[in-house]
Length: 249
Image 1 (cartoon, rainbow, N blue to C red):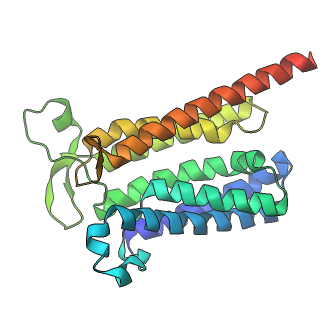
Image 2 (image 1 turned 60 degrees about the horizontal axis):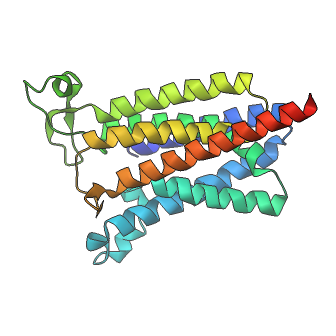
């Protein structure tokens, strides 16, 4: 098992435990939260692999069998987010459970999972940063001697470490905000807005080829779109909460 897979597994288990412990406080049954976590994890895995294969179809078009082997490596977090959300919303609809409440409970685990994913990439050499050299100022200061997926060591921007630090900061923000905000539907938009904004910025430091859209890497375009959606959803949630508060007064 790779370090990435091990850390992803640890993140899923720990995040699910945290969600189950928080379920009672939000009026949800721990069993339903556990089921929802498993459904979302499966949907996320399918989505992550599907998007990765689609983005690298030039290779997988001639190696279809490898496309069905996610354990060989190759997952796209944007696909994981989409697949996990679709699966979770379907589960909530079937079980007649509030998706907002469920997402509130699951969001800290999602934030923790992103920390684990970045650390896994640091150990396995995926999502590596740009190569650097002395004299590049800040880029050089942010660099470490790191390998890429092929095991080639070179001074690179420690992108995975930066991603883990940003993800950790977002996790802290989610936990702190969760203690002060009592209305539902707040945690996930906050995570989405903060995390994808950071991911968009870090994308400019990422090495490796990627499909482009109007001259931009496709992952940066996706990050920018998700950051906009998260910000708007957060603004709507805050506006609705304010109106409800004013009505109660």
